[in-house]
Length: 391
Ligand SMILES: [Zn+2]
Image (cartoon, rainbow, N blue to C red; front, side, top):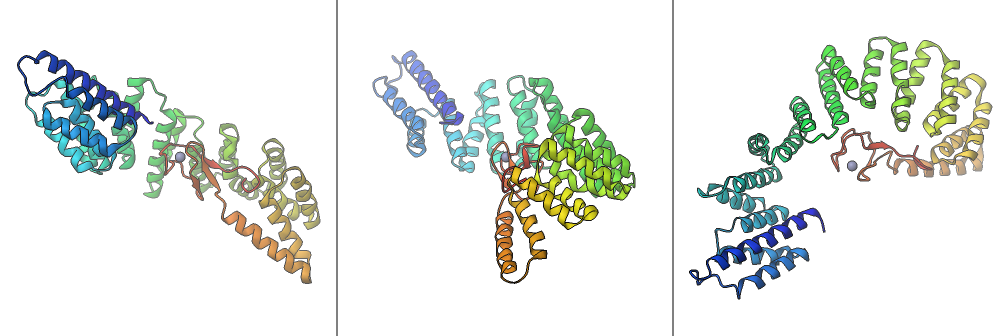
């Protein structure tokens, strides 16, 4: 059972108590509400909610509304259920009717507004949702929820400037540390600036990202690429190498460009020394394969084959075997060559069918590195996959 059902259950219990109290108070005057027949309906409705039987729960709530259309809690519970079932039009109607009541208390009106805002979000009417949440963000009761919803809206709309302002307000409201997320918003702005050809704006946003979150890998990658574009290869190299200290899980993302910087600087020996250090400290096939290629270039194919064979005994890897077969193929002839070709095709298929990245939060598999998980919408949770088939 998730929190929604607990919330609905609580609403039903509250509505039951409310109705029961009201009935007792007016028992002498109101013949229509009898204590003898109402409580069993509530118990039944509650039971359906607890058993996740939405259809039957809705039936009970509708009957309750027929008996007493003034019950605010029943409207809210019913609207919530409709939204949960994807019937947002009906949820919107229920909440709009509720808000239109002249005698509605302020607390109840605000709660109904919050629910209506969520209905609008579910139906993709983000402009309407935004204006409701803006109104609620100024209240004491729903300031935090309204800011959280506004943050969701601005991320969906890719309005990063507004998202930054709201995230900063949210931090001051509930003390939540959102610096890593705000840094991602600055990186989004840097990306936009870069795409528009505005290098100065891009660099400014990268600096802001790194000021607010010095461990922001994405900002380091953007900074390194920017330095490389400007021909500052030494600076670019240092920037990319920073990733090791920020989060070594992302090293596979920068190894190729680090090797390229060393090549541009003509420092192949230094590059090999660096790769040996990375391989010994963190493992991973990307640095190992780059190192193998450099050994081949500087010491010949035989030395490369010896090196990769030894390393593969220590850390089995499909990518490593694939590379080894490539070397073997170059030297093989006849039937052996055909067999090796078949094995190479198999390793190729195995690698192409495997996810390269995975979300640590929800398990989403990806072929590309997303900074914002398309599935769970968390930031910086997608990382290169480790293991025999992965990195
Ligand atoms: Zn995810």
